[in-house]
Length: 576
Image (cartoon, rainbow, N blue to C red; front, side, top):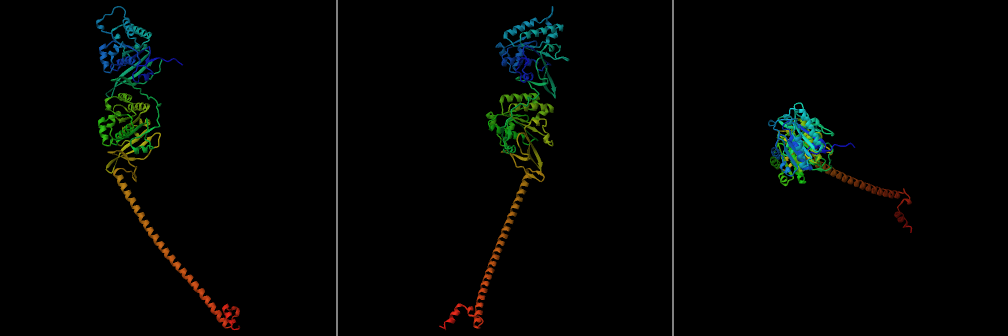
């Protein structure tokens, strides 16, 4: 394997990520820029973080500000220079450069500077050294070639002692520094700039060169606040973040049923977009309430309303967020979008999340950032926010304000590809009233409803109603109620009509059964009469035949054999 350059971590938020570990250890780094861009802060924080986080003592050589001024200035950032000096971890040496009261005799050299540096390094066993700023030496010396030679000697001397050095320099018109020399003899050059865009000051950092190391080449926004300096990488942190199969409830039972009966995936990002007054914040509040009931910590960033107003408003719809604030599960952070630059908003979000470690984060609404930056800048901000939240396994809900008449699907199109679940809520005007509707535009990884549903916000929270579609489309409000009443009446009429028809059929059935029974009875009678007539005819025939035979016998027409037995018996009796 190829040898890698050893680096000294700065401890400055985001900077070590951009540089792949920090500044080149044992080498010189030039930090240049205009007035007020943060050069001295960068250098001092490099020393302070080195002492407090990496146990590397440091020396700060100041050519402009005195020790007292530096101590007072950095105390506002929470840096206790006096305490570190008392611990023999930090040494601040101010070199007075009032050249108006000095006369130059003989050749100029920086031996005195080397002596003071050597003493300071030895006293605290320094691993880090700052020279702020050596440019003042050029202002008083006419022989710049001699000074450049001497500076090279100083840098070599420091390198031989293995200390990591940061020097600062003022930017020039055509050079990184006014004299254009330090950049060539430095191993790493960092340019800090401050610009005014839309009347908002923004600071940017760029790494001009970094010998022996790969580094980011973009311009990176950086911030100065009460905790020091923070660098914000613009590029995404990547797509290697954890993906969860677990789901969490939205807090709205019917919405969960529309999301395959499961709710949202944990660690996913949800976007609720819609017009003003369509119920976005109420939906977010109900989600927060459900999360707190599960015992999860929630962080609510509000960019339009103060926390007290949100708590009061959602209490009217049956959501009590005050109890979660009091229990410590819910924390609000309310700031106007115009209070900070986009980068500052991102830094505030980072720090609050790292401090509170929430499982759920609400951003309400993200469209507020459009007023302080271009669409591209807002996109970069939201991209970094979403990446950060996903990387930390946080379930995030973002609300987005749309304007009346805008196509819903085009809202926040620049971040829609990063959204896992997108729900659109809107106000529907019809029949002289406004009603709320919602539908799920997408929900990755799960089957979901494609219906447009009406929902109500009452004192019991959000209630999603069954989709009701008429001949003219989805019906809401009074139109839905009227149609339901009409359909109910029509259903009742149909039921009554069916019942009447059933009664009629029962009557016909009874009548037919009676007729069938009468016909059967008549048939039975006629069959009985027929049998009786047949029997009578048989009897008549038998009697007729008898008398006919008797008459014939008497008349001699028939023989003895034709007489009945009783008659034969009667004839035999006289002969005996």
